[in-house]
Every structure is written in structure tokens, then in C-alpha cells.
Image 1 (tube, rainbow, N blue to C red):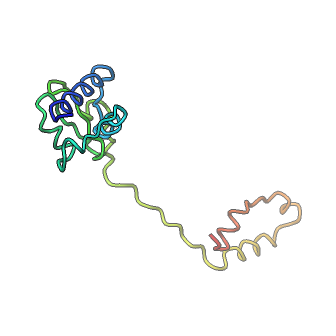
Image 2: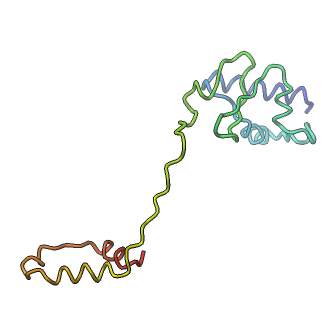
Length: 142
């Protein structure tokens, strides 16, 4: 296979994909799709990367996702497409939410709680329910 035939194959697949789905033909799919037809693009393009080979084709245009740098698509040169307009761009949320640090309870927190509970009447103690996970946190185990 020649470079011209490889260019026709990629152009054809990109055009068909865009017409069918309205989305770019992902650059990462090209090697797999060509290999399914028994074609090895590396033997044709040599040391040149697939992206640079496709960038050199006149009938195609490369589109890159603004936040997912590995998401590189190929569309017909005259097609109007951008990942932002397609709604696939990640929502920019400003600075990331601060990470909440767990405060370590004082070493005697569980003991203090149990001493306070010891002053309750037996009937009142029957109504107290403390989850085990709370007691573990008060003990400082987790």
C-alpha cells in the first residue's frame, strides 16, 4: 500500500464516520481499523507519527479535545466541529474543592463520652444509641 492509498483510506473512514455520527473519527481507532483490514500503517509512514501524517492530508482536519489531550479526532476539512460546541468539554469549575482533613479527636474523647453517659439513669441509657463508627472515630482508631 502506498501513502496515497493510506491517505484515501483514512479520508474515507473519517468522512464516513463524521457523516454517520456527526463526531470525529478518533485518531486512536485508525491503527486498529487498518489492522482489521490487514494493513500496517507504520510500514507506510515510517518514522512519521500518524498525527503528523494526517495533518499533512489536504482533505482532513485534526480536532483536539480541550481537556482530554489524548482525544484527537479527524474530520473532513470543510466540516464545522469543535468539542466545546458538541458539549463534550469538561465543565470548568474554577479551583478544586479543598480537601477536608479529618480532625483527630482528643485522646480522651471516648472516655469523656462514656463518663458523661455513666451519669444517666438506666431508663435514659436504654434510649441512647451511638453508632460503632462514631465510637471508633472518638477512640482515634480511624
